[in-house]
Image (cartoon, rainbow, N blue to C red; front, side, top):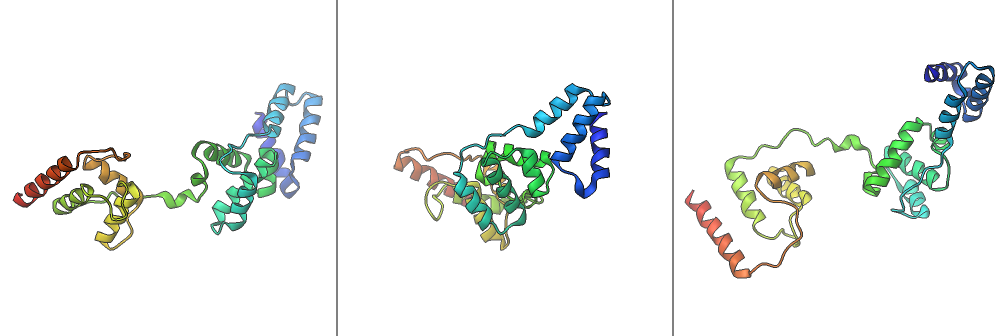
Length: 213
């Protein structure tokens, strides 16, 4: 009930709505008894509570990323984090940026949990349909995974996606790279010291079996 009353009041205020006007309205309703005082206290406490920003980046770096961002969605999210890092409440940041306070909180929680890489337009994350590979393509990918990647190091989802992109002649999403790593029995691991002769023997055995099939 209390939230319906708040919503109706904000609709009446329209462009004049602000945290100050809402607080005044709440105080009057609490005084007259039309809204329970404890509801007023709970709501205003949540609106005014200062939230902590995880120390992934310094405040100056948050500002730099906000000003440098070319993507509109990422730019707005960096701006929210920059304001929050300065000690502003989620309600104030929502008012400054034009977003709902719940969205501001969601951006903050995602940043705190996942770090700077989470700040982006997540609509671009849709990997599309599953990528089907023929038996021959699977054998070719499996053989490639038994060798070091072209740039050295270990195979990652992105490297597999890049390999598939080069074979298909079109962009393959990183999620499809991870999918085929798992389906072929590989995983993302740090390289372990292994006996060179054993590696060579295993690879040669695989190549012979592939040719025989």
